[in-house]
Amino acid sequence: NAFNRSVLSSGRINILKGMDNAPKNAFDDVCAVNALEKSVAVDIDLSPIIGKRGIARQKALAAYADILKFHRKYGFMLTISSGARTYTRLRGVREITNLCSHFGMTDEETIAALNSVSALLNPQNAVTVNPQNFGAPSENDSSVGESAACEESGESYDDIGNAEEIS
Image (tube, rainbow, N blue to C red; front, side, top):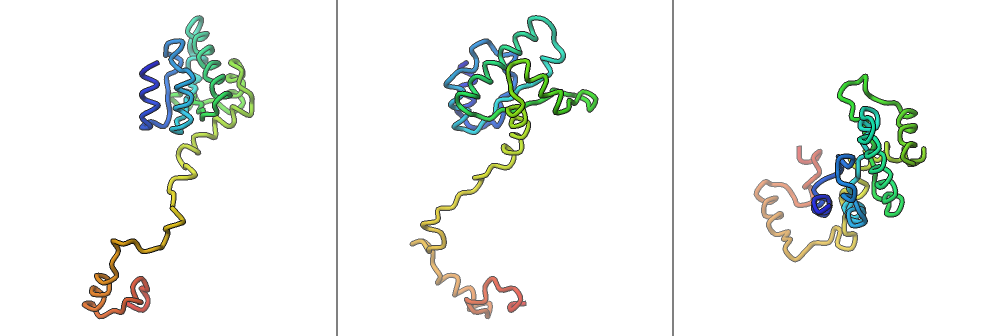
């Protein structure tokens, strides 16, 4: 529990994996809030459901049902992975949807989780610009140095950035 909290609060990870092997209360409300604030997705690996039997499979299903409960309450991102090591072990969308229904995930939630990887790789607010100060010269900027460099090269200050006229 403390490990997941510290990892999630650091903000240095994108996806938290291995929750099927974690102790019962390893992911709680604090972890869910940290995952939401730091834009960390929690992975649901389907390989324990596919490849394990008995208690191990039941434990994975219970862990994923708990994660789904927190996802519905707090809204952090989920990812779904097949755990495939070869292309023959890959699963289709219909199979993944059916497997996820075993722990209560709806078709819409499954599709959203499958599409969340692109949201992790391409965040919408990757760069933010303060429009209030955009383009305004600061006190540290000096056009004297730029105009002096232009005079030495024989170009006018207005021709900087206009490659056709300079060439």
